[in-house]
Length: 330
Image (cartoon, rainbow, N blue to C red; front, side, top):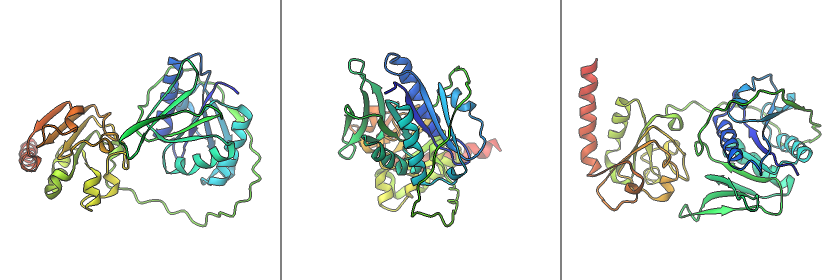
C-alpha cells in the first residue's frame, strides 16, 4: 500500500469546484501530517483534451489521466470499473470523492468493488498522528451529534465530502507530466443511456452567492421581504428546512445538512433558531448576522452580529430603506 491520497476529479464540461476544494484540503492535510501522506494524486477520467494545470494549482502533486471515448457521457458502471483498475494498480491509502450527484452515485459502487468502507457526507478530515488512521467526521442522528469514523482494516479509506465544506486554495507546486493510464473497458452494462436532457439552469444559485438573506419559521408570513432585500444587496435568498417543508420556498435554496452548504461573505439568518441541522450548512460564512426574538436561540452562539428583534417587523423596514437608497443612487 502506498501513502498516497487520491482525489476523484469530476468533470462535466469543466472541472467542478468540489474537486478543487478536495485537492486543496488534501494538500493542507498532507502538509500537516507529512509522515503519513506522500502525494496528493488527482484521478481524472475524461474523453477530451483538457488543461490540467488547475489541478496542480489547487493542490495536486501528481495527476493520473485516464482518457477514453467511453468515458463520456458519465456512465456509473464504466467509471466504477476503470477506477477499480487504477486503485488496484496504485493502491492509495486514502480516496476522496465529492459528494455531488455524480459522486454519491459513484462512490458506493467503487467502495463495494474495492471491498472497503465509505464514510458519506463528511465535514471534517484529518489524520491521527499516533496511528496514521484517517479520521472522517460527519453529522449523525439527524445532525444532533458529530461522529468520527475510521476504517482501520481496509484500504483505501474512502469518504465523500459535501460541496463548500472546504475552501479552494492555490499552491505553488511544480506542474508535472500526467501519468497516463490506459484502461481495459470490458464491462457490458445492461444500462443504456438513450438520451441526455440538460437540467434547466436555475434562476438562483446560493452556492456561489456572496450575500445570502435566509429565512426560517419566524418569518414564514413575510418571506417576500427577503427577496426584495436580496435583490437590492445583489444577493440570493436562502431558507431553512421549516420553510421548505411549508412549501413557501423551493428545495434548491434550502440551507443546511439536508440542503446546501454555503460559504457567503455575509449570511443573514432571519427568524432562524439555529438548530445544528441548519448551522452545519452555513457556519463557515465570513459574517453571520442573526435576527431573532429569542435571546437564547442557538443561532446567536455562532453569529458575529446578533439582534434580539422581531424580524417580521424589521425586514419590511429594511427593504423600504434599501429601496430608497437604491433609488437615490440611480
